[in-house]
Length: 357
Image (cartoon, rainbow, N blue to C red; front, side, top):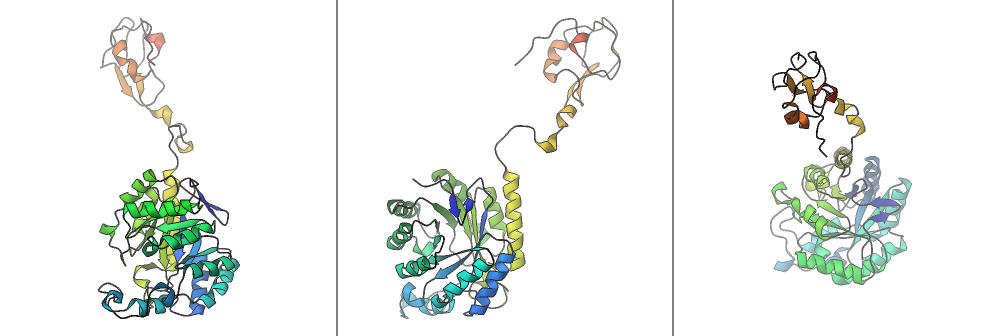
């Protein structure tokens, strides 16, 4: 049904490829196009794989209403209305062309999270190479279906969703003809405490689905993301800011450029360390087998003398007989004098060994 890997602008994404690290700009541009463009430059310089923006307006994502259900209680944005928050945080549609052009100039992929069908129409006109479905939109089956019908790769976050809802959203993508999907484990807490991350869920998602799994990380540093790669994450998404102290809307759980560069480097190290399943001798081990244990004469032996645990020992290096033969050897006598430090061989034995597979 789904491909086992994704391909975005020619970059293969999956368990056998380096982690795909995404810098989420969100509303950290503070309402200034110049800052958004500077963020693209800075993010590209960290060597991340992609930059993500969000395509909505306050009017396309909520209602301009101050009723209790439209008020945010507690947390980072407590006391604000949804409309007010999204009006501050949105990326104006009039900027989009300039943002895509700036990403192209930096030779870095840029794609977006659409929040309604009109956003998809805009992004299609700009040849957006992939779509991200945000956690809060995982239950918007109409939006998910519209994104899948474009035929573009989809990355979808699971925050706030039950397993049943995740399966429903995945099925909606499949039913709309989508074949490239990555699912990101996500805790939609802003910021997310480490103890809420439940990163073992990543390994469980890898068992349940045969397409790439990743992490959308809202913690305050890169610890969770690095661990996630060790658990099988193929995609890492983190919020990006130029300066955590600049008062931008998501700065409290965003990484600065130097931190993003470290994230990219450290996740790549983890990926390299994971390697593949294998029991062959690695280049760094070359010659190491010669220094494993084998049977050596630990005390000079005369012809006709019995072999004992005092005159035969299992020691390093590995030039003597295998240690598995010690019980057979202890039942025999030497057929020649053997000097101290000699690797034991069958030529020293009175009875041929019974070889073991």
